[in-house]
Image: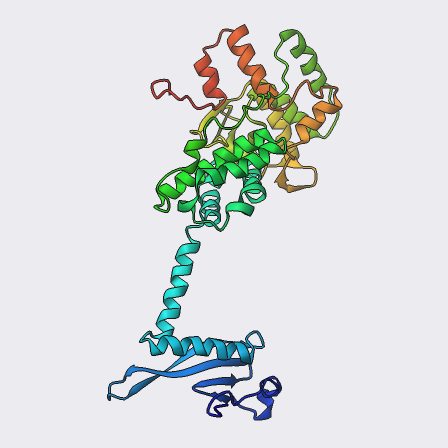
Amino acid sequence: MDRSQNKLTAAEVKSATFTDRGKPYKLRDGGGLYLHVTEKGKYWRWRYYWGKNDRGKPRERTLALGVYPDVTLASARDECRKARELHAKGIEPNVHRKATRKAGMDADATTFRVVADEWLYEVHKRRVTDSHFARNRRRLAMHVYPSLARRPIADIAPREVLAVLRKVEGAGSLETAHRLLALCGQVFRYAIATDRAERDATADLRGVLASPSKKHHPAIISPQEIGPLLRAIDGYGGYPPTRAALKLSPLLFVRPGELRKSVWVEFDLDTAKWDYIPSKGGDPLVVPLARQAVEILQEMYEISGADGYVFPSARGRGRPMSENTINAALHRMGYKDVMTGHGFRAMARTVLVEQLGYPAEHVEMQLAHSVRDPLGR
């Protein structure tokens, strides 16, 4: 064995401590490899020469090889050997390491997981409700990331996405499969917009999934049934904010999440209006408040105060009423599978247009539904 190298033993490396000498010191293994023992830890280093300084002499450089005991003596020697081979080929080891790391970071920045997370937080989160955002993030994490997370998004073929969707479809979750197809499409289009992909791999998958049976929120739309429902709400004796939200639902017919998350700063009871931004990224919406709505809100003002949520959670004022509160109350009133909080919107759409003759466009606007036709908008 060449004693100019491999001078250290594993036992010597293990037993070396800063307290041995009370100051930093080096244990040399030979060939430029040494263990730097300091008060904070033990570090492997390789000393080599590259280029010349201002005086024309070889410039000394150092390559960090890791921290003991994460990097053992044998591992440090192996890393040192690789660095010597690069050096012998005329490649500067430190420059090579930086270039390799940058290439790795650039590659990571184009994986499906990185692009999807970026789209979720930079785009999607700003356009939907918190609960909707959380559901879509969970869908991607559960079904798509296990197969595609580390794949460069530009290299993903339609068949790879289809394999993910077929697995979900085969488990009987047809609606989830369709939602995943739409989510992946948005991620691919974001990748195109940010110059990390050339095409949307989901474009070739339209029509390949079976159509799910369309489900509607249970809703009462018959005038003969609406009267008993309103009387039941009026006689509800539960938590006051829940009762108030129930009474306002048929008067305002906004999305349940928008109602329960409403804050006092959005309301002007003197002019009887509620001015807010709809949860699905629509234009600012002004909801006129009927006299009865103003009276209900004035009662809530006495309960919840001038700050924060109009309908605070029973568990504390720092958060809004739970998303299940309205439906749970309707269930207790005997309307399970008959009426939901969202059903008040269908009630308004049907009665206002079909029974009372209001223009459908006006009702759609008040429902904060976007109109596809630019002239219609």
